[in-house]
Length: 515
Image (cartoon, rainbow, N blue to C red):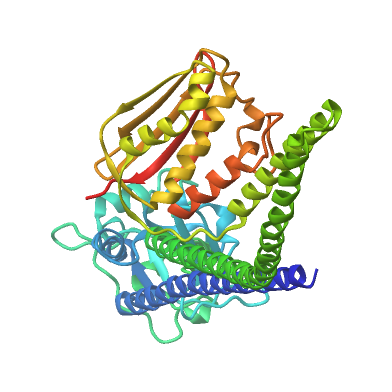
């Protein structure tokens, strides 16, 4: 329970550390986004300052002609293809928020946007800035001295003037700006037919009439017409539509960078968690190994004591068997006594055999490898069991390649003996047993012992190698357990599989071929 709590605490700390890194990256990304926005705002103010300086330079007596201002705006919008910040639209607004002069994509600007100071969209950001020097009085009158007039040629060309400004025959006629010029006197002309500009008015001339200072060519307007013109053509605001392509690229690049950092931070946290878990499991395994080592030492001591007890028990059993055999041979022994003496000898033999198997199983396996001819060793074991083979009229065949392997000779013979005796017990009279040796690779061999007996049930094919598990009435349950013990000591593997169509196959693998 305490270990699980420590594991949960470590996992919680790692998760908190990862979340802290993620939060930090989100905050840093927000700072980058705000810095990119601030950079666009700064550039908009720089451009606004540049335009204010240009309008002051181009202004003459409070007026600025449109045909002199438009090239400047076109230069800002169209001649900067490689600039970091690209202008998509530039517009100069009047007091009503309507564009007086506009260059660029006019679809980006609308009257609703004019009411905002800053408008962001996927394509562009729009800034609405005041023109330097513009102010609005409480009465709603602007004090900006700059008025954008139509092109100068429209005011000085005689034909245009006769058409748009100085018509006498149509009372109430208006020009494109909506102002009436029917009361204007005919302008003076020179010999070439061009309008001669009148001399500047004396100081206070226009101002005495209550209007702003006017250019000479606008002295013919009444005060109401001049105020209406300035209300429509006077500069009050500046609109800049700037592309957000670079802004979005910077934000996207930074977002990917932060995501990669958060991802690797998560990988690091996960790796630290797995390392912690492995360390915890390693520590637990070490503790278990220490305990298992202590238990193993105790079991070895118990095993040695049990083996000694079994060894000492065989001597009294041999004595009992000998006495029973002497009683059975007495001349005056009755048939009943001889029969009971035989029963004593049979049971003594069974107990002695079990003790022998137990001693063999409990004996430490120290492998002393030598070069052994495997096929010859199999043939020798077959000859050893010739009496049992002939008694049941079995057909035993040793086949395969004449290979030599590295193994402990005595232990290998015990394995072969136990497997062959198990096969002779499994088959019926006239059955067949095949011992086959073959090469699995250049360095390993395989040994198979096949029989056509009753076979082993699938659920018992692993259990038969455990001590005291047997399917034979006369078996001790230690023969195959001894085989498994010897096989593991050599580093081999043993399998019990079905032999089609009937019977069992015991297969030994990873037998090292001798050089």
